[in-house]
Image (tube, rainbow, N blue to C red; front, side, top):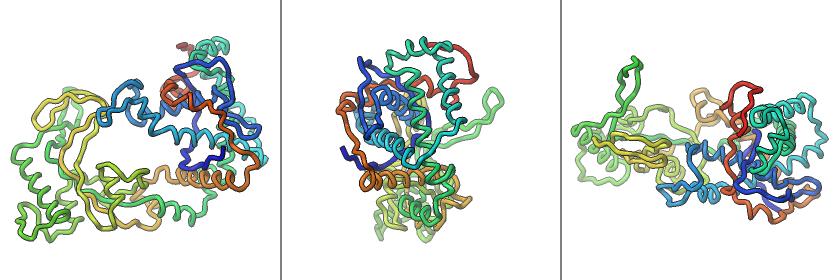
Length: 418
């Protein structure tokens, strides 16, 4: 089965699955000549991927049955629908990396072999009381063993070595012209005037003597003034009427001057950079900006999303909010700006390009694999028709070695069985 390897999401971290089902065997899920992804590898990779998805969406405590208020889907169905293709790309990338490791005649230093063994022993220490047999027994219900960890960790280390061989440890082998090309093709710049007509942040001192920002509802006068500004900006940038009478703003002011005077968010006066969204749909500033021509302005509803539930005061009323809910608090007037050449390497834009070298490496590696698969590979990727019966939502999120990878557990050598 030939598969075009696109949208590569680099996996250089360790993986581990706690599947919701068990298997009587350990059949091959995908193969590439002599290289294989077995069932236990697949479930292991899926478990870490699912844990990352939940963490990135602020849903660590959610179950797969938890409904999503906006879409009507459950967390599990959302994961299957939105993330399966990316996950499979990751799996195929890992598989092809094993072939490239041998083609490039690379070798794994003994220090890396030692690191793999130390990592596995650490996991066994926490979850098996230093007994591999006990660890395997504890992990059996999830469909993997300590042997799985060693094999997957080794595959991932080989992938890392292939990438370093091609691009360097920190992308230092990538030519500037190629970085410029990636930047200009994948990033755009925008600015937002945020007008909040519901609340404001006020600095207060709590009972512990700490200075904190708290949400306070706007007064009736403040709300009216903010609504007048919204009306003025709408007429100026969105739906002009020559007979309109401006109530607050001076229409001769530029967008930049209006931003400096009225925006409730002035964190980045130089503008914001972001990759193009995968789909230019939805009602938020980024997707709106992606559809604009340079120097055009759009208006979208301002929303505050909640990753944790609680009781909040909104517009003078106390409201109970569930995780995943949002409320509207005004409008965003977003302007598409021209990009600045070499912005990815400028100090004033550093907040937007912290992972630029890493993502550029991932982009180039994805392109490299696609070309290799189409023109050079002597093996064909074979789907053994097992993955279709193992959706991501059938694999529980990893809470074992994931915790060690991201430093959630501290210390080494303590026994903690689950």
